[in-house]
Image 1 (cartoon, rainbow, N blue to C red):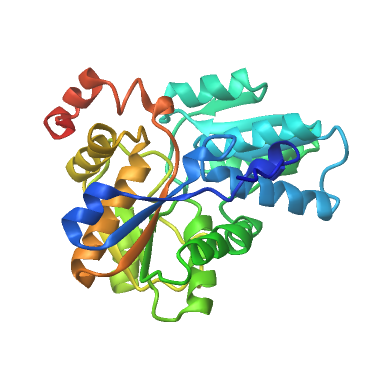
Image 2 (image 1 turned 30 degrees about the vertical axis):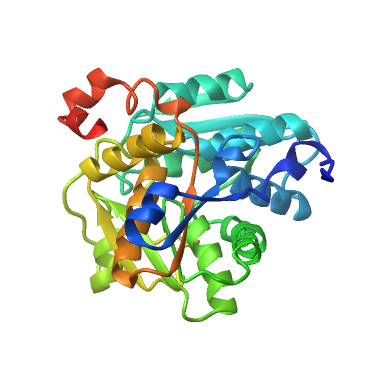
Length: 328
């Protein structure tokens, strides 16, 4: 079998396989397929956004050779940027909130990024990490990624992730579901799939504490409850990447279901994934049951579980949140 030789880190991003999730498929009578974004070279779906944003900055002359790149991130996009900055000769500075798993900050430092961990505050606060990052960039005379409102993010998914799903399902996709933080994956994939097949159902998967479920259902940003286990998804505003995206419905996934689904993927199918992947698969199962047997639902397996060992995969931590019983 011929194996393509890829040229460096950037060219290794994308063309991840679709994996049939056996338990979820058998339980629903549908084909539930997970796009294995954890196989990207930086370990997550965010490699695509990082490459798209950095490519766009280079095309527009926003970063000079040997320059500095700054991003505000909950982790995975920063990891993608750190890898790419190493590959392209840039300095990388990451601003991240202190509510993320410590493994993410440690990994970023190992990759050579300068990490500025800041207090977690509401988005309205001027010291929110997304608002601090542009000030840091200005202070350093650096380029800024601005992943939440830089539509090069969703453009990357429109150009790659969406076409790959369409190609690998041979157009036999009935629904797509995923959670959103920046809105890039959902925004780009939804646009591409809807252009190919208007009947494809696009469903936003949302954790408790996010305002997006209510927004999709009722047209108003309103949150309820909270999630202890999710990181980087579920927000309280409409980003530029999410704005005007064709979304048909939303499902809200509570922490017990996230834990049960994510641990089920590990113990029953061998996939060691983060909690966002569990959120996505739980939503895909709900959509499959709504549609009925015989349909094909695609979702995103965002990243591996290694970065969550101290929290999500720590029995003592889960027990402290009252969630250990759902880990099986």
